[in-house]
Structures are given as structure tokens and as C-alpha cells.
Amino acid sequence: MKKLYIETLGCAMNVRDSEHIIAELTQKEEFELTSDLTQADLILINTCSVREKPVHKLFSEIGYFNKVKKEGAKIGVCGCTASHLGEEIIKKAPFVSFVLGARNVSKITEIIHKDKAVEVDIDYDESTYAFSDFRSSPYKAFVNISIGCDKKCTFCIVPSTRGEEISIPPELIVQEAKKAAQKGAKEIFLLGQNVNNYGRRFSDRDRDVDFTDLLRMVSQIDEVERIRFTSPHPLHMDDKFLEEFASNPKICKSMHMPLQSGSTKILRAMKRGYTKEWFLDRAARLRQMVPDVRISTDIIVGFPGESDEDFAHTIDVVERVGFEQIFSFKYSPRPLTPAKDYDNQVPQEIASQRLSYLQDLHLKMLDSISARELGKIYNVYFEELKPGGYVAGRTDNNWIVKVKGSEELLGKFADVRITKPGRLGLEGEVIV
Ligand code: 5AD
Ligand code: SF4
Image (cartoon, rainbow, N blue to C red; front, side):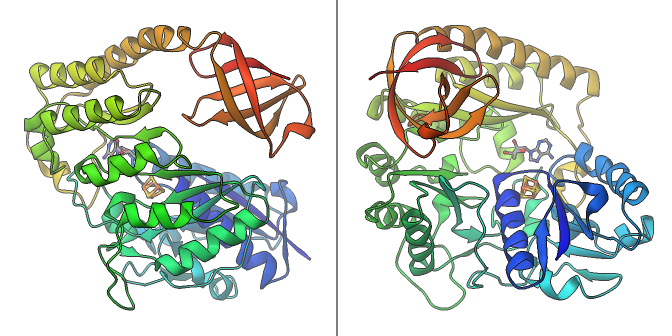
């Protein structure tokens, strides 16, 4: 057996792509996984290009791999930066054996046998490819529902790395979810760049099915107890979708609503397709329909042209929606995107100040958000052992909860009383 070491950066799509790579290499080729870099025959890095920092990190990381790898080991670069930089990677780092784009994962078993090969075709269609099966957790399963992204947000490189959006046929999704659930993965996590635009385009034939229909189909699988999904787009949060979200007991009550900016002017420059008012309306409707819902968001500060007044609109939305979780970023100009050429770039110091202001504000908000959890009782699905004799799981509305316990709890649901709230997670005790 040969040994495979794989490092995964970026989003949940990348995590699933890495699972596909592992599946193909361990089942169709003679590889087994190792966590020891120096023992590996094949070292892969699955990259992200959404911001500049991880791209810089890539070259220092593979330089390190090259230094410590064993004699004859190959290094491959996969993922979004592979799609974006292609053969430039081999030019800059000639010890790299191959470059495999984010939309070419199914070619992994071919490319490992080639030298200096580059496969980065963003028109390649893998939407009906049957990957071998590998899952890093027995308790929950990521299931892709689409590939690519048709949105043209002006800050985002993803349409250029993952290509045009194609939905995976619902029959295949249901079949995969069922198989995983029957093997014990009670939670199904549906993945796509833009999940609630599902059904827009299939590569084999037309079908009249949207994301809400797909949610219903997956929830009809008996063995599936929880459904999560990411990422939805606020623009497509119509009433039909919100009503299904609210009324379907298998759909977990946590929603990611990527705001990006609270200023309608900036949202227009980002080509997000919605206004501040639309976003506030959807969030308010969601809170009204699902009082326990936890809403997370992504925010970019310092997008070109963002004035103090625009930033104040973002803060206004943050306060009015009361997001339970915020992923916030300084705008990073990316190649192949329109916004990098806008002539009204915001100075770094101002962007940094805004980011600190937003993050400090949210830390304060988290104190009151978590304090109200004390004494509540939640049904927790346990997934992971933690140091110090703890087991951790998630509530339906996506709090991470840890309790004293052992592996007996793994893969099980239990009612937990919250005894110690924290900003990032809760501690509790199982009620017997
Ligand atoms: N600069 C900063 N953040 C970005 N994101 C996407 N592109 C950029 C960029 N150029 C953020 C968005 C997105 C999240 C995955 O990353 O907030 O929702
Ligand atoms: Fe995921 Fe986007 Fe990063 Fe690609 S660029 S790995 S799609 S976050």
C-alpha cells in the first residue's frame, strides 16, 4: 500500500472534494491515508483562493512539503488555486508533479500517473460522476447538490475557479443521502455554492424541481433525522423556501444568510441582487416564523467605495438582525474579478479599523446571546470526542455543546441542560 497525505483549506465544498479524492485513491488505487507527512508517497494540498492570504500560504506550505517529503514522493496541488493558477504553479514550484482544478476532481486517478500534468478545465461537467465512497465522519454526511456558481458577485473569484452552475440530478442526491443515512449518518449536510438556486440547470435533461422540493425529498428518507445546508443566497429566500424551512421538523433551525454589506449602494456595486431592506425583511420574517433560529452571516468590510455611512448601514443590519455568528473579512482584491479594478479602493488602515470595530461589537453581542442559553434544554446530536473526557455535539440550531461523557454518546441524540454558556459554545449535562 502507498500512503496518501492530504491537507484541506477553504470551505465545506473543499472538505467534500477531499473526501472524493480520498475515496477514489483508496478504492481505485492502492493508497491508504496517513497523517504523517514524512511517510507519504503522495502529498496533496486542496487549496482555496477566495482571499489572497491562503494563496501566499500555499507556496510556503508546498516548499515545506518538498523539504520534508520522503525520497520519490509526489506533490499535487488541487482545488480553487489550482484552477486559478494552473501551470503557473509548476513554473513557480517545479517540484510539483501535477495541478488538479476544483472542477476536475474525478480525474485524480488519471493525473497521479502523469508528470507535470495540469487539469483545470472549468467547463468540465462532473455533475453525474459516481465517486467512490469515503466519509470522514460516520455520523454526518456531506452531499453535493450542485457544482459551480452562476452568480457574478464582483468581489468573488469562485465563478472563475468552479465554473458555471450545474445541479446534480435529485435522484442521485436522494440515493446518496439514503445510502449514507442507512450507514448511520443521521445528519445530511447539503452542499453547493448557492444551494437555494438549485434546479437552475441540469446537464442531462430539464426537470421542474427547486431547492424546496429537494429538501422535501431528502426529508422523506426515514433514516435521515437532520438536514443542514450551505450556502443559501439571501436573494433566493422566497416565502416558499422559508415556509419549508420553518415547518419541516427535519430541517435544522440554523440559517446562513451572507449579508456581505448592509449598504444598498455597496450591495449594488457587489452585484448581490438584493437591498438592505430585502435582507432585513427576510431576516425578520425568518425570526418571526422560527423563534429559535440562529442566523450566521459573512461580512466583507472595506469593499471599494465603502464610506463611513455605508459601513454604518452594515452595523445597523448587524444590530437589527442580531446575528448569532459572523464570519467577517477585509476585502481582498482578487484576480479575475471586476472589483479589483474599481478605482475607489479603501485604504487598508480604514478597512482594518472597520473590521476591529465590527468584531468587537459582535464579541459584546455574543455575551448576551450566550447568556440567554443558561438553563435551556436542547436535544444534542453527539459527533466528536474532546479532550478532558468531554463529548461534543450540536443542537438543532447549531450551538456546539460539550458534556462530560464517553464514546457511548457518539452518533446518539440526548437531551442536555445548559450549565455554562460561552461565546463560541455551551457546556451542559445530559438529562437522564
Ligand atoms: N475578499 C474578502 N472576502 C471575500 N469573500 C469572498 N470573496 C472575498 C474577497 N475578495 C468572503 C465572502 C464569502 C466568504 C466565503 O468569503 O464573505 O461569503
Ligand atoms: Fe471554497 Fe471559494 Fe475557497 Fe474555492 S475559493 S475553496 S469555493 S471558499
